[in-house]
Image (tube, rainbow, N blue to C red; front, top):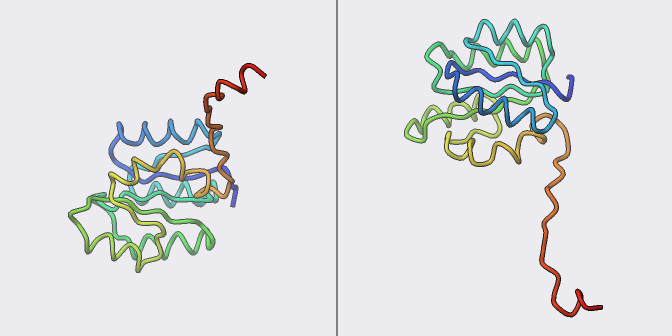
Length: 139
C-alpha cells in the first residue's frame, strides 16, 4: 500500500471534485475512476491504501469488485457511501467488507476529518483558538 494514494469510484464529476479537493488539503493523492473497470486498472497501477466506493454507481457489482480488489490489494481499506434510502445496499456493502459504510450525507459531513485515517495517516486536528481570560492578558 502506498499510504498516500486512494481511488474514488464515482461517475459524478462535481462530487468527485469535492472529494478530491478534500484529499488534496491533506496532501493525499486521490485518483477518480468513472467505472469499476477503470477502478481495477488504477488499483493495479497504484496499489491504493483506500478505495472510496459510490454504492449507487449504476455499473457496480460490489461482491465481484471487492473480490477483484482483494486479489490486487489484499489490505486495501474499502469505504462505501450511498443513499440513505437504500438500507439493504448499505448493509450489503458492510457484509462485502466495506468499513465504514455511511449514507452520503454523513460521508460528506465527515470526509475532511476521516480521510487521513482511511489513508493510514494520523489526523492532526486544527488547533482550537480559545480567548485568553482577561486576567491572563494582563499578567
